Length: 450
Image 1 (cartoon, rainbow, N blue to C red):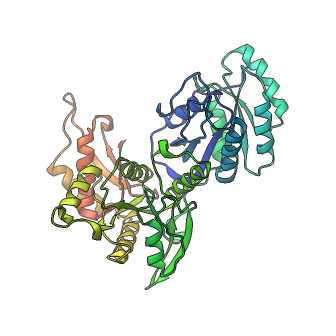
Image 2 (cartoon, rainbow, N blue to C red):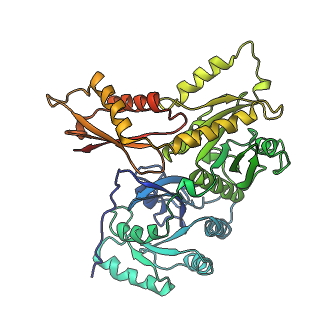
Image 3 (cartoon, one colour):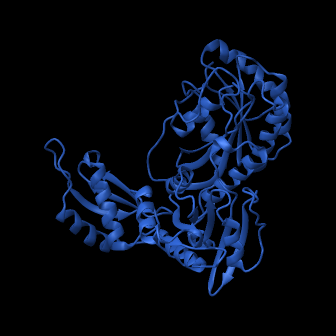
C-alpha cells in the first residue's frame, strides 16, 4: 500500500533561524540535485542523466515546519577525470558526517542496492549523526514494492519518495527538522561576530590585531585558514565571541575536499553569527563573490558591517573614500543602510571602530520598540503617504506591531494585504530605519489581514 504522502510546499512566513546543516549524500545520478532543488525552491543545481554533472558543491537555504536550515548537495563524479570514484565519494561522505547535523542518504530504486551504496552505508552506520535513507524515484505501485528491498540496509529511518513529483518529501522533512535547533535567545549568550570574506582579504590579520596575539596563522597564500576559529574578546569593557572563517570563494574554484570542509564551516559560522563583518579588498574592489556573501548574510537576517581593508594601498588621488562608499552603497542597494569602514589591518587603522560598529549593529538587531510608540510614528507616516489603491480598492493600514523574532520584523494589519505593492513596502521599511535606527540590520515587513 502507498504510504500517505504530501507534496513538498514552501511556506513563506516569519520564522526562526537554525544553526544546522543537512547534507545530501549518495552515489551519482540517484537524484540528489533534483531533491536539493526542491528543498531550496529553485533550479540552482544542474540536472542531467549523465553521472557527475554536479561537480561543484551546492549550498542553499530551506524552510520547513517553522525551521530554516542549510542544505548541502555533495556533488558527484565526472567520467574520465583524474579523481578516483570511490575515493571522491568517501571523502565527501566523511566531511558530511563530520560537519552536518543531519544526513540524508539517497539511493535509487531503479538500480537496486549497489556495492557503492553498501560502502557509503557502512560509513554512515558508524557515525553518531542521524541518518535518513531516502529511496528515490518511487513514483508508482511497482516501484513501491521494489523499494522494500532497501529495508535490508538496516536504517531505521527509511523513506520512499520521488524528488520529481515531491511525493514523500513532506514525511521525510517532518522527521528531519526534529533535529534542527532554533537560534538561541540573544540575551542568553555573548554576541557572536563572524569575520567573513574572500580568501586573503585580511580576516586572520584582523583577528590577531584585535586580540593582540598571533591567534591565527597568517600567510600570503589564500586559504591558510581551513577552520572556523572561535576567540573570546574581553577588553575595554567589551565582551563577545569573534569567529575567523575560511575564505569563501566561487564554487567553481572549490576543488579540494578540504576546502569544501572549510566553506561548510564558514557558512555554518555565518548562520550562527549575530553580526557578519564582511571584509573587502580595497585594491580589487567589490566583486561578484563579495556580493554573494553579502546576500547570504542578508537572506539569513544577520547584522552586517562592511570593512574595506588595505585602504593604505589605494591611490588616494584617483579614489576617495566618499566616491568608493557611494559606489559600494549602489552595489548593495536596496539594503544600503550598513556601516562602511575603511581600514588597514596591517597599519591598525580604525580596526576598533569596526568592533564598535558591530556592537552597534548587534544592539540594533536586538532592539524592541513599544507598540504605542511604533503606531504613533508609523501611522503618521502612512497618513502622510497612504498606500496606492489597487483596481479601485483602497488599502487601509490600521495597526502595526513588532513580531517576536530574533531580528527586527513588523506586521502591518490592513484590509487588503495582498494589494500592497513592493515599492510601498520599501517606503515603510525606510520610515522604520529613519525613525528607529536599524542601521546594519535587515528588516522584515509583513502585511496581515486585520
